[in-house]
Amino acid sequence: MSLIYNVTIKVEHSIVDEWLCWMQQEHIPEVLATGCFTHARTLRLLEADETDGLTFAVQYEAPTDEKYNQYVSNFAPALREKSFEKWGNRFVAFRSVLQIVN
Image 1 (spheres, one colour):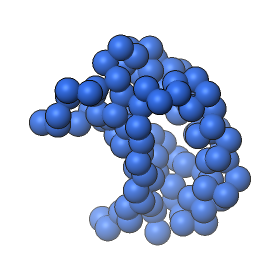
Image 2: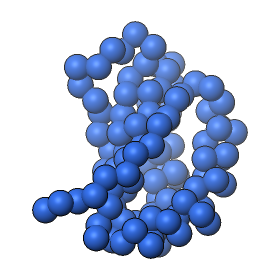
Image 3: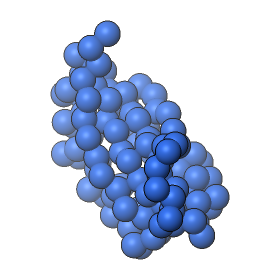
């Protein structure tokens, strides 16, 4: 059963370009290097309130729930901490897990 690990992030306007570059060149490659996900895609939410910043969703596909659980247990805490060390409170994120039905 494949899963999508979806991270939705609202990013302050002042850091959007730098943040996107960091995500594409550093963070997403680090997440994929864990071996827990087969690929990732970055999306921008449209028709969202952009007063406080732009909203993005990064979706990582895990081939099994075991791989997803391995990521959460072994890698997620350190990678989340690294994000906070770099960006502080200039972003807010929430996470959800979706099952691929077809």
